[in-house]
Amino acid sequence: MIRSALMNVMTAAALKAGRGLKRDFGEVENLQVSVKGPGDFVSAADKRAEQTLFEELSRARPGYGFLMEEGGAVEGSDKSHTWHIDPLDGTSNFLHGIPIFAISLALEREGRLVAGLVYNPASDDVFIAEKGQGAYHNNRRMRVSARKTLAESMVACGIPPLGRSGDHERFKIELAAAMAKVGNIRRLGAAALDLALVASGRCDGYWERGIKAWDIAAGVVLVRESGGFVTDLDGGADMLAKGAICAGNEAIHRQLLEVMRKA
Ligand code: IPD
Ligand code: CA
Figure 1 (cartoon, rainbow, N blue to C red):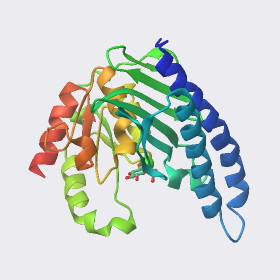
Figure 2: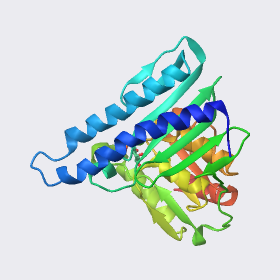
Figure 3: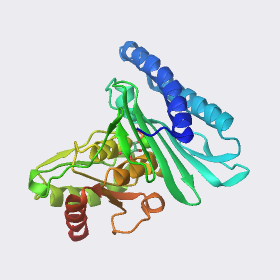
């Protein structure tokens, strides 16, 4: 188990924000049937969770900067540390009462991702990792899967929504290429959890384009510390800047990258 002061701070902040999300998720179910629907309520829940994370982390680590889905960039006096925060990854799932969503929290130090936490309050699954200290799922060491071929693999992906119709054609080409090789493909709707699933060996690989740094920063640390590989879709290390990602165990990452390159 990782017992560092840093991980204690991250876990305490995420569990606190998660308590609010859990409560709000219960409410969403009631709002599904109302005329107005749960839309505004969910965006308020999202902002409340982010505020809790911001306050807790600012108190515990004064001066660190923030990159947050809702609040954007907040520069800190300590230029060497930045938190990457998605307070509610899987917003559409949350909105529809589907319990696949998570808080995603990562710390970047001197330009390197050094710690990541992904927490699904609906299932109480906590995934943590710290650089050089391994990765854990609910206190148990995580390892990526050992599957060697795409044909026997479960691979997660992200589908660009209607609002990003400009990305549809490329995705359809990539999906067709993947479908010709991969045993099973999933679209779960929360990038942070897609990466946590790869890290814990449940999924063997994952790819997505048009993704933001706060969606994947924590998951990148989880996968690496579980012995997996994560790159952008050109095989480089610019996932956060390019918003394109490919992850998996060594064999599946290599093969999936190849499929995407040829697509
Ligand atoms: C989204 C989810 C989804 C991914 C999208 C993200 P949000 O984040 O991670 O799985 O496909 O690209 O924007 O909007 O639910 O926080
Ligand atoms: Ca997100």
